[in-house]
Length: 230
Image 1 (cartoon, rainbow, N blue to C red):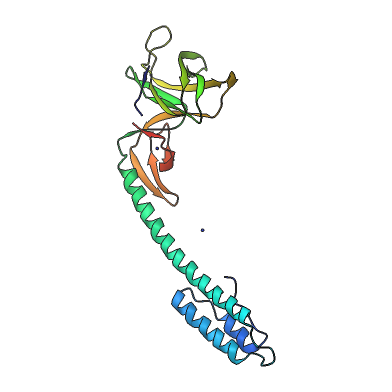
Image 2 (image 1 turned 90 degrees about the vertical axis):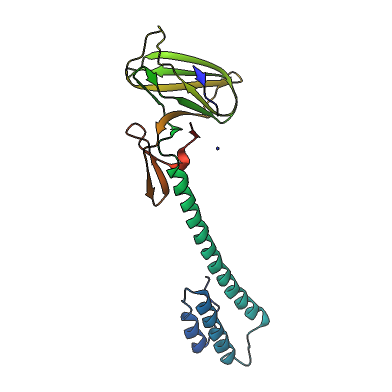
């Protein structure tokens, strides 16, 4: 077996007068410029209709000015985020399209054999292990091939099976299952993921982003699911 070379308003304060309450309810514009105009109308109305015996305090006025500043900032932030999201989507689509006809490793536990050759497979480890083993299982669950991998570092490790069984004979065409086990410090290690090989035959666009079509065995996966490009 050979190792492959290797990745998110508060409402404005209202006064007790009828005029200021009516003005406050009118603050519903979505545009920043219109919202600012309506805020100034509200502020002037509030100042004109305030109780001379109990005028608006400096702290209340400052709080209202801070609120409109916050609204303007949020509006600008939303615009910026929309622009960034659009750029990311475009970049993701281009990246996905560049993978068409290329082989990738994604989460999975299958290896395919056909015409005396087999598909690559891989293991992703969160941490280093002292010993790792891969068993290839037939459809009935029997072990037809075992690979003793020894110590492996954290990360993604890719491998190729020559398609030969334990007795040296050629494995029959079909899908086989991978079972991986590992140990660290004498204890079983489970922070690992087996990886299966698929060829990108097409790219789909969905609300969640670009999706890769890897055929009937692995189906459609998100672009982020790709662990390695071979």
